[in-house]
Amino acid sequence: MRVAVIAGPYVPVPPKQYGGTELVIANLIRGLREMGHEPILLASADSTIDCPIVPITDKAIFFPRHRKDLPAYLARAKEIEKTTAAKLRGILDDVDIIHSHGFDLKDFQDFPNLTTMHGPVTFQQLDYYDHRRDLFYASISRNQQDAFPDLQYVGVVYNGEDPSRFPIVTEPDDYLCFLGRFDREKDPHLAIQLAINLGMRIKVAGKIDHQGDGYFDEEIRPLLANPLVEYLGELGFEDKVRLLSHARCNLHPTGFREPFGLTVLEAAYCGTPTLAIKRGSMPELIEEGRTGMLVEDFVEGYHEIESCFDMDRRYIAERARMLFNYRTMTKQYLKAYEKVIDIVHTRERQKQTIRRMAAQTRTDLSDIWTGNTRGNLRSPSPSPAGRGSRHTDRPEKRILQ
Image (tube, rainbow, N blue to C red; front, side, top):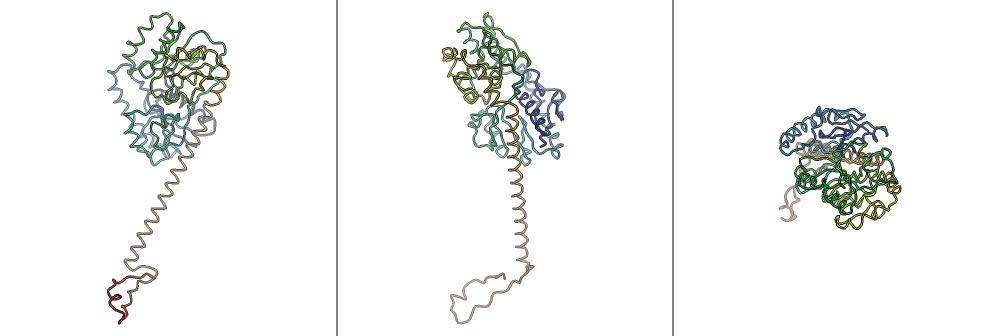
């Protein structure tokens, strides 16, 4: 199968540091190639994935660090959207399906298409999706579908990576960790406050962009003065794995309806349990009491985290590797592709049948009114005389024999 995979211009594939979506895309492309399929990637030219790349911009246009840079960034993103659409039209004859990871496929809805919803559905997006009900979607958790259940979902496909890149560590060091964006959606200050109250060391790492600019200065920077807190900045892959694998527990205080938590999965690959707020997809990723704990808030987490320290880290790793890996993810996407292609082709055949029937009907009606039928149009016989006005008052009928 030939698949046009659209990654967008924001981060190269695979990412060098932050980029959960792009990491998933890289693993999907790897899986497709291993299974004998032919992905074509539309992405920034600095992507280094092993497959044909259609460049939509010379370099990735990373999210701006400061809010003042946002207007120029959005204008550039708009230009790249037009370039992406033009490049996509240029390869449609060479692919069987389009798989978007953020690009708007509204203008391509008559072609087999699939959009993976990587982010939460917010109030601001309801109108957007309401006008795109004819597209096909894959959600990354069941909880994500609940936010907008009326779209054309063809499946739930959990994210997956290559577990072999993550070592299983059964004897961790004595620290907690947080890995993620520094903003008010991820709420890392709650993780730091929990560690300080427990009297435990915590290592925190992640990205700061315009959404978290003021948040970091207000909520995080004052806490960094505590000797228990170590800020590592934004990490590359190897450093990220080292952080997650040796932690006693991964902290996930996310306060919004998160559709998936890639760091929860990555920690689990290493055998590290996660303490998380019971929201969004967390109950689908965490087997409570065995691979982590789900709490209403981190005040409750203060009392529950001790359970995480005694969990079987090898079980955590084996479960994650079995349920959430790139091969399973790829197979699920292939099923989704086949389903979409079958639906689109069936609808097209139905449309063609309807068009043929309509054309035939128009021809038949034209023949009737012009007299060009195979039979003859006969004028009705006169009403028999003497049978009363009840018969003679009826309107004449044309009878086709």
